[in-house]
Amino acid sequence: MVGKYKVVTLCGSTKFKEQYLEAQKRLTLEGNIVISVGLFGHSGDDEVWTEGTKAMLDDMHKRKIDMADEIFVINVGGYIGESTRSEIAYAKSQGIGVRYLEQIQ
Image (tube, rainbow, N blue to C red; front, top):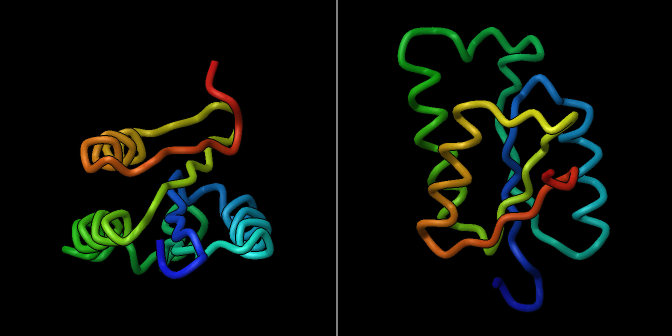
């Protein structure tokens, strides 16, 4: 924890751009330092799909998780894709807490 502020990294499919922005705003107003994605590949940021960029961004996101006290999973409609499952497993393996936008069934 950085001072009195918890650091939260957002995870989830980038097709949920609107929900990412809403969560970022809400968590910030609740007094958290929020780390998000840099690009929304599934919401129109085509630069993600250039050679080597997706792999770099995936690795970079793991480093963002390393900086966090917890991750907040954007799981709209219960959707959790392969990359997000990997991030959840990674966070848990590092002792980093996991919260979800929608309750897990």
